[in-house]
Image (cartoon, rainbow, N blue to C red; front, side):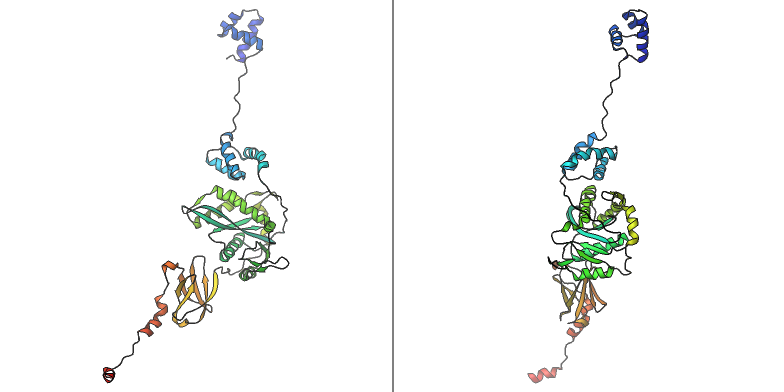
Length: 391
C-alpha cells in the first residue's frame, strides 16, 4: 500500500517526465498502482472499520429484560456487568430511552409533605428462593413522604404482629417517628371505613400510635394510590432488589442483604420527582422526626385465656401447662414472632413454652403440676379389721 512519502516521489518524478514503468521500478510497485495514484492525486486513504459499541453484544439481553418488565437502568447495568460489560451507564440509558414509549404507564398526581410529617406504609409480595425453596415473601415498605427514604422488612405473614413489627423496625432505621402514618385499609390497622365517616382503627394499632406518638390515617376505600410514594417503592423493590438478588440462604440472610442494599443503592439514588439524592434530602428531614420512645412496643400476639381445671390452656389448637395454683384463673397470653409463648398472671411471667403443632401434642412442664400429682398419689390407709367387719 502506497504511503504519502511514496506519492510525493511519484509526483516529483512524473513532473520531471519519467516514464510510469521507471517510477514503478523506483518505488517497487506495479505501473498501474502509479497510474491510479496520479489519477487519485494522492495515496489511498486507509479504510476504517466502523466502531462497534461496547453495548451491542448485550442488546439482546437488555431487550429480553425490558420485555420481562425490568426497566430500571441500574438493575440492567448490573446484570450485563455480571456478563462482562465494561461500558458506561449513559450509553445504556440512551439505548433504553427510545423504548420507554412502549412501556405501560399510569398518570397520577402526587402531593408533597413537610419534613417529618408523614410515613406511608404498604405491603408487597413476591415469590423467590429462600433456603433453596420457592417461597412467598411478604415485605412491608415504609416510606418517608418528604425525603422518599424508605425501609422494608421481609417476613412470611401480613398479620397485625408483623405489621406493627415492620413499622417499628422502620422507625428505628430512620432514628425517629413521623407526625402521622398513612396506611391502606388492612385489618391490622383499619377495622372499618364508612363512606361517610371516620375510619375505625384496630385497637392495638391505636395503642401503637399512642406509644410512638403518631396520628393514624387511612386511605379512602378504593383510593390506595393516595399513598403513591409508597406504592412506587413496592414496585422499585420488586424491579430492583428482587431482580438483582434472586436467592437467599435464610430469612435472616434476606433481611441482612436488604438493609445493605438500602444503604448502598436505594439511599444513594437520585429521586426522579425532587431531583435530589435521597440520603442528602433525608438529612434535612431527620431533625423534624420525633424521638423514639425509651421502651420498645411489644408487638407479640396478645389475648386472655382461662386456665382449665386440669392445669392447661388452649392456644391455636394445642394445650400448654400452667402452674397448678392458677387453676380456674384468667391469664394473659403473648406469642412472639419467634414462636415463644409467654403466659402472665397480672404482670408476672408464670410459664413459657414454644408453640407446637397439633401433631407434636401437648406441651407440659412437669414442675407446673407437681402439687396435682402429689394430691393424686395420696391414698387413704385403712386397717385390715375394717374389711373383716364387712366380711
